[in-house]
Amino acid sequence: MRDGFVKAAAGTPAIRVADCRYNAESCFTLMREAERQGVRVLALPELCLTGYTCGDLFLQDTLLRGAEEALATVLEATKHLDMVTALGLPVRLENKLYNCAAVIHKGVILGLVPKTHLPNYGEFYEARWFAPGPAEPRPAALCGQTVPLGSRQLFACRDLPELVLGVEICEDLWAVEPPSTRLAALGATLILNLSASDEVVGKAGYRRALVTGQSARLVCGYVYADAGEGESTTDLVFAGHNLVAENGVLLSERRFAPGLTVSEIDVKRLAYERRRMNAYPRSDGDAARVPFSLEPCTATLTRYVSPTPFVPEDAAGRAVRCGEILKVAALGLKKRLEHTGAAAAVVGLSGGLDSTLAVLITAVAMGLLDRPAGDIIAVTMPCFGTTDRTKSNAVLLAERLGCTLKTIDISAAVRRHFKDIGQSMEDHNVTFENGQARERTQVLMDVANQCGGLVVGTGDLSELALGWATYNGDHMSMYGVNASIPKTLVRHLVGYVCGDKAESEPELSHVLADILDTPVSPELLPAVNGQIAQKTEDLVGPYELHDFFLYYAIRWAFPPRKVLRLAEHAFGRTYDRATILQWEKTFYRRFFAQQFKRSCLPDGPKVGSVALSPRGDWRMPSDAAAALWLDELEGLE
Figure (cartoon, rainbow, N blue to C red):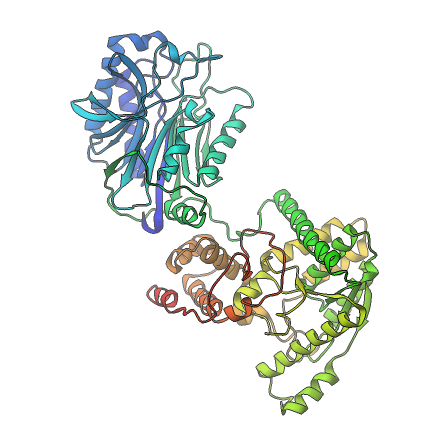
């Protein structure tokens, strides 16, 4: 449970209808297997101790007594398992029969949660045997224990306060007002659903959408355990469609086979997201809270952690995402051009990825305005570090897009400026680099003034996070279209346009392909033998790592040790622990030290879940200290 990860599972035992002894053995055998796999929370199907398809046998004392004896057997067989399990059986109370989930732990029944919504349509006849469960818990005698029976119960872990269990049963999820909605509002972070949902064509997709959608709506984990092998096939077939989801993401799924469906639910992540969303209701209320204890442990991660959290890994999803981002960013610029009445959009083209993306977005915006591409003034400003390759690509790109091209060599102006301030041309220090960056920005601003235009910024989200921008240089513009696009995504966006134009505009596609093949560089140091001498990732570290750190450290506020753990899980075959730790320190050090640049950013459109605008997503004092974060990393070496 370290770092908030709780290994949870949905299990489908192979049962026999009405054979409660056999079913008890199947259940506790599966429970023992779950415990061997490190599972701490397990859901088994609805009425699994009897079978869901018993029909009028539910009214027989023999079956009800057999179900109670089966539960007693399970309790005895698993009294040493440090795992909370919810499993289904019928329970009698006050002349009523309830379809219940028994929540058990170490031989103790923590509570009985009855089904609230009973389906009585189509193939379902539950109201023939069962009554809707009461909300408020009532005492019930079962297996020699007196336990609460009611739907409004929460089961709270003493050792991990963020782990609070709520339970609902099958149809409850499909109802207009699922009990899980109320339970989550009262504090449940992990919902267990004990189900017996028969399989018909097309139902699996709908069921999957319900489970993932409910987990997103409630900001919770959701474990759905479905009946399967052994249920009667007289008129229905049950496929054991088990699902584990977290906050809208399907973590694990299994169908057409008995056994366990396992993943880890990050309850601390869920708790953070609820705190962040001030619209989420307070968790104080009238639910009974039943405490339990679990021995602390470290869950082995089996859930997939993408090394590129900003970039969809499947080609189709990535193409859709890229198309959306280009449109959203272009719509932001379109509005700004309309509002300011700008006669032109001025973009500094370097032949690199960021400026390429900026001019591509600007071209889309001009298209939306029904304005010619000639209203884009593309300015290339060669200086000491410019190579023939990047200069040529900048010129070709402007020509292929139909922009108005200006080539302004700033070498002489920079030399004169260096002479004025006494900067040596041989001393390639920060002044040598930043003086060129500020001259470029001055040129762009002046060109915009000349034509009544607007300077479009090219800096991306990753550079803003690391402060890899010259203050009052490329840090400044009149509208930053790339401001919330991370570096790992910039490449895919340019690649998307490259592929999209391959047939219709092959010459444009060809130059984009060469830009994609060019190393990332600010080109502020003199070229060596005509080649780029300054490669950004050699200096600040791999952008794929920094974007990973940015996503988990800023979007999810994970502590450094948890970010490191996830990075090792995601990048274990690419980087060793020492390398990841080295660049994570760099990330935190630069992120804190460079906040002053983000505090005065120009406007720019938010296109994803992470943005660093001081007016929107990120408010941080420029003089905040990184000591706590860096100290935690030092302790991990």
